[in-house]
Image (cartoon, rainbow, N blue to C red):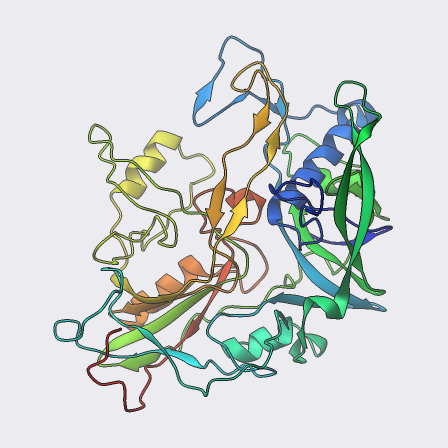
Amino acid sequence: MKTILLRPTDVLFFRDGRPMDGSLAGHGAAWPLPTVVSAAFHAALHQADLEQATGQKIHHHLRGRNGIYDTNRQPDRKFGSLKTAGPFPVYKDGDTENWHFSRPADAQLAGSTKPTLLPRQVDRSTTPSSLAPELNYPVTNTGKATKDKLEAWWSEGAWNAYLGTLPRNRLAAQCSFKNDSDFADTEHFIGIGIDPNTGVQDGERLYSASYLRLREGWGLGTLATAPEQDFNDSAGDHDLICSLLKGDGGRIVIGGQQRACSAKFVGKTGSRLPLPLGKADDFTVADGRYLVKWILLSPAIWPEILENQQKGVKLHSGGWLPNWIEPGSGRVLLKADDTERGERENRNAWRVRVGKLLPFSARLVAAIVPKPLIVTGWALPNGTDRPDGGAKSTHLAVPAGAVYYFEATTAAEAQKLANALNWHGTTHGLEIKNRRSTLLGEKGFGLGVCGTWHFFSGGGMKNQRI
């Protein structure tokens, strides 16, 4: 993937689904979700019209969603190969960039990477508990109660120190902790409503809006790729993103109200991506079990799945519980062996082969899940499934920083589980291999890293309800 830094030329506006009437400002100054960046690059590719500009053909596919396609129409949809990740706050100083990511939910000490929330071994058969049936252990705070304000963002170096993994370079080894106010300000303005039929101000409705202004030196770090096998730019690259930004940088319109950002490639092609590296071995062992934890770097969406007996699909509540975790038992349902589709492997044959693979010998035992994020959007009309356009489905996403604790039966199973959950798989940070969100994975949801954990060994809290 190409590493790109977006530098806004003005304030940015990222409106959510809440109203903007009277004193309600619409919360437009929140940090943007991954869907915003994906939509920005998708729109930029359409606007660039690379087929007309280069004379080369780009793959087209059929319209439709949820597996429903209009086969009577000619394929007219483009850029289905686009994959993005981010945005993340990035401070650029000269030729170096310092990337930041949401704080892990189990680290509750200001200015420190030490985990302070730890699972506690309890006897579920004798201890009253309101835990979900998938979870064996409650998570206990090992620190003292405090009102200190916790930093919302950790640098890449702080994450590597927290995980116990090697940094990319000397700058990435430095720990820093930031709040939103350290790199962005919120500005408020009054606007006049727009008539949707004429596209001009209606002179009747007034609204208040909040905007995000990044401080000097800060930008939105993103990763993007749009490979096209039959497309070649002047440099011989098959990636449409290279042609879009033309090597020396370009312009991307992001968010609402047509706010523009300069876009420039950073980093070296083929080098390690600027995301924290997850742990892949040397996990803590307790009572013969290998302890692996998985922390989200970006939000994840796990929807409710209804039962379908004909297809052998079982009911799954989704929400906080990943769809690849078996309800009730907490068993990991991901396949433990090679699930990559071969270059010449038929899709049906690939599905049959993967279906016969055995799952991991591991299970979920504890979790820390903060309040959900609301993910929604607006669709333009099309002739297949949205003739009138309108609001997209609203999803509740598990936020970045959520922590899931696993137990594996052997060191080999723990290593395989980590390779399946780490965003980089076995590539040592050279490529995004795993996006463990059921929905919107191609838009950057479901990126995570693995670490290890140990049990809380303190006393007290006996005979208390968990």
